[in-house]
Amino acid sequence: MRYHLNRDLDSNGNAKAFKAEAVREVIKHWIATKEHGQRPVNIKDLFEHLVLEYAYEGSYKSVLRYVRAHYPKPKIRTFRRVETPPGAQSQTDWGEFPGVRIAGETVDLHAFVMVLSHSRMPVVIWTRSENQLSWLKSHNEAYRRLGGVPAVNRIDNVKTAIARGAGAWGTINETYRAYALAVGFHIDACQPRAANAKGKVEAKVKLSRFLLDPRDKDWISLEALQAASDLLIERWAKQALCPATGKSVFDSWQDEVERLGKLPILPEPFDIAVTRPVRPDCSVSFEGRFYPVPFAHVGSQVEVRGCAGTVQILAEGRIIREFSRGTSQRVLTDQDCYEGEATDRVLPPPPLGKMGKRLQEIMEMDVEKRPIDLYAALAEVAR
Image 1 (cartoon, rainbow, N blue to C red):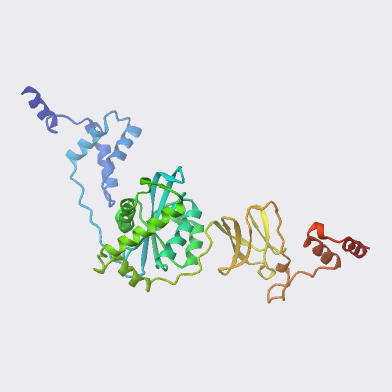
Image 2: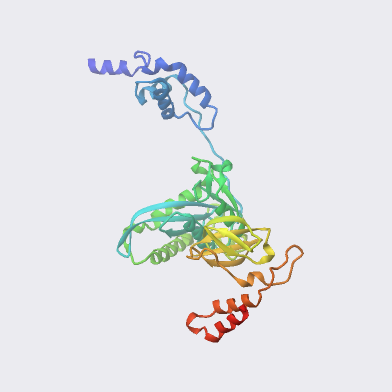
């Protein structure tokens, strides 16, 4: 009986002094400066502040008990439910699936999930990585399956999309910005710690785990897993109800396709995109190499993209040259870049002389096919 009486006294904040009482003014100031935000005061942050700045020796729970006893419960936070019109928005996120068996090998897989916000039609793309190339390749595959491009893509603040910061104040990754411009959609980054702002895709990430957990069997290939996933999603979409239309998700998606942006020729995924000036020698510098560009672009800016195995050079959104990436050559040449009529702004380079033409002929021939008389003719020109 004495034990229970003492316990009741200990649990009564008026009968037992709070250890955090010694720093009550600090706590009061902290809460006054933090409570104006939309989120409730983070007691863990407060506790760490007391320990680091004021050498507080009490426990985290002592601070928690003090705050609960002396300050009212935070107001209930509400949020606005929004139903987007057809074709207006998609939501995108990643899901992680460690320990998947692919062809007898245990690997960590990533599920790229994109959902049309209106019809709730999902797409799941399986990849081995969340790097820039996988991010853009997954976008391509998702848009092909959806049959078009929504006006806006709402994303989480992943590094492949947001280089610094978060939400509306974040800095968009330049590579992703270039991709969005080429495909034709607007990037809308969520506010941090705002899961309800992308609730549809959060739900579909959970759905992907329910429909198909890839860890349940040994897949012969990643392609086999993708095919099984596509089939299960289509089957689910024909049975599930779209709350915005009252029809099935599949039928609602069929109606929404007409409102999506026309599927463009999707760009090859790239992990870097930079703007470079074209030098007077009709070349641009990229990754320690010089790539030729048609002379008409000298003095202007072109976009250079580093793709999986190629380097693409674009002007006004159009690919004007493409080369192999990471070659041993540091200077690449293309004589066609120096040919053509003058423009209002740029003159073509002087034409090759006799020696230059002969050298070019030799370079374009296989060594074993070069005739001796060609070298003799070259020597004659040199005299």
